[in-house]
Amino acid sequence: MSWTGQMYFTDKGVISNAKQLQYMMTTKIGQQAKIDSLLLHLQTAKADADKVNILNELGWEGIIEGDFSKSRAYLIKAKQLAQKLDFREGLANSLSHMGRICEFEGDYVHSLEYQFKALKIREEINDKKGISYSLHYLGDIYHNQGGLSDNFSSLMEYNNKALEQFFKSLKIAEEIGDKQSIANTFNCIGNSFREKEDYIKAIEYYFMALKLREELGDKQGFAVTYNNIGRLYVKQRDYTKALEYLFKSLKLAEEIGDKRAIVKVLGSIGNCYLKENNYSKALEFCSKSLSFGKEINFLEFIVNANHSISQIYESQNFDGHSADVALKYYKEYINGLNTINTKKLAQAEIKFEFEKKEAVAKVEHELLLNILPSEVAEELKAKGRADAKQFDEVTVMFTDFKDFTQISEKLSPLELVAEIHTCFEAFDNIIGKHNIEKIKTIGDSYMCAGGLPLANKTNATDVVYAAIEIQQFIKEHYEQRKNNDKEAFEIRIGIHTGAVVAGIVGVKKFAYDIWGDTVNIASRMESSGEAGKVNISGNTYELVKDKFTCTHRGKIEAKHKGEIDMYFVESISSLK
Image (cartoon, rainbow, N blue to C red; front, side, top):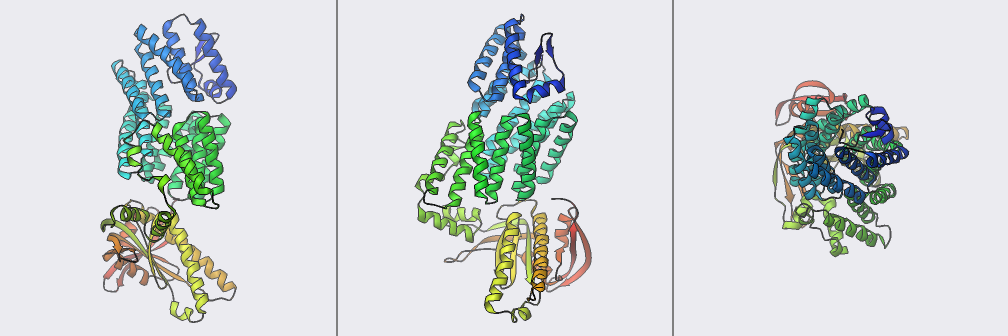
């Protein structure tokens, strides 16, 4: 007997044709037909062990439909009968399914208890497939717990626990050749690497999952993985690519009637639009996610949707009622978190008392965020100071306009300021998409850096991508102005990667700045470059050479720095 929600009945008994089963599970009619068939066979089953399996299957169908009370009733009966029969496989299945209900309700403490009990039984009876599933579910629970944390160290702690369980599950699934489990676990491992911001590994595992799902004809799996790839691109601020994958996911989820997948992807689409500041679209999709989430009792995504909607109304601030509506949804978000039985994770880490926010405090906060990185602003508010920090790997970019003095003399003061503003505003938008921090402008020079205030491993690639976009913007802007017989600037861009110290300087007018030889060398990369070119150092080249096609310029003399290996970035050699 199967135990994972894949057992079907005909007048001749149990069948297991994969294509037929998949079709039945992907339509509402098929879903109800399956339930009717199970109920019929529950009445006619002669063997008590078969009754346990059927009750477990009915419990699983209740989980799929989001009817947890009905599901529990079936699973309790299955558990009691399995204990009476000492049918340990059936008992483990009942416990595992009950753990899934707790997980979907956000009761992670009891979910863990059920899954550990099920795992113990499955290990005792050497049920390899069952062990693999239990380990996978444990990974899911840890991953979900991490997702509710607003503390980066806690997120990483839970992600590491999740990865440990997923890799254990994967090893067993590969040993027994369970391709469906392997694909599902690849997908979940990709999620954990995504949260760890290791995007290269994340996408690698996602595409391994897609390859297996194609072999299996697994539409439901494609919907899940497309959603997760979309969420990865959201984290990378590539919203166009993100929406492409998210809408693919939504189309598949709707085709197969997978309510849980629909709720997830609607929330992901809403969050993408929120990040893109498209508040009307964000509200549309987050509201749908909330509505469907309530329909199937999907607490985790009800909580997420309430949080996103509160942020939407807070961000819009288009009328006098927005703050009140934001507060209403934020309270629902807090209530949802309080329902989740993870006090240490949720309540202890939520420090922001939304109800007590005052308009003045909010304005001060907004001003700080316009001046300082959000992490530094929060530290300053909490401690009254922000400590200087050493970063071992930061990528610094300088830009400078060629012949600025000569060209500026041909423009009126208003024209000059407007032109610099147009360019720097575009630069701000570009680096914002690539997780890069603006440091300062000095006259016509623009300075930014990747890899701070939160360290990451993608900073060199992020900065070079941004540099190419800035280069392209200036090229198009230059041609447009020349076509209109207007003076225009060409740009030099220089990039170097190395260690810096970062911190706040000043008392009355705060400024976040960076210091170190890395900054000086980055400046030399710019001054040693050429108009219309992105000039990078050997250090940066070693970190990005697999992503970009570069031309080695040789060792070039840099003022006060001696000879330095330099490269011109010619093109992108692989997709981000």
